[in-house]
Image (cartoon, rainbow, N blue to C red; front, top):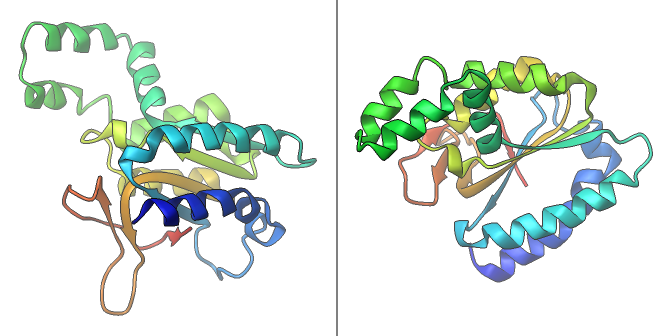
Length: 196
């Protein structure tokens, strides 16, 4: 993905996600209204600045209730609320190997718990647009495909846009859809989302 293509897609994003057909999930049949906006990881700062502008614009749209959720921040909040965040920090500071830290967190920080935690905080079914950022920062603890599967029953028919630092190939007759984080990490299968 070249920078010009990214900028063009970024500039058309607001128009796409505020389109009434998009918000009403028209034209996708019975599919889940999940969309993936891929971007080069090195463009994270530009994406964040642009999303801040889009958020300001979205606030002025009558009858649009939206939320932007940073998955990494919510994972940290979950650990803090469960009183284990400081333990994790201390483990890392004392030289515990990252794989051991990941193993210790498996019971607390997983896609099921995180989806439930986010829903309890925000009541996701009360929104008609959800923007999900911070996906790259959650690797390897949180799988985006498993996270989307866990959010599916909580978001109902609400369009959800995942901002993904890497590539997403859409499911075709020849190949299952897949994520590739940072365009480096092994492909993670997922077939339900549409590419923006």
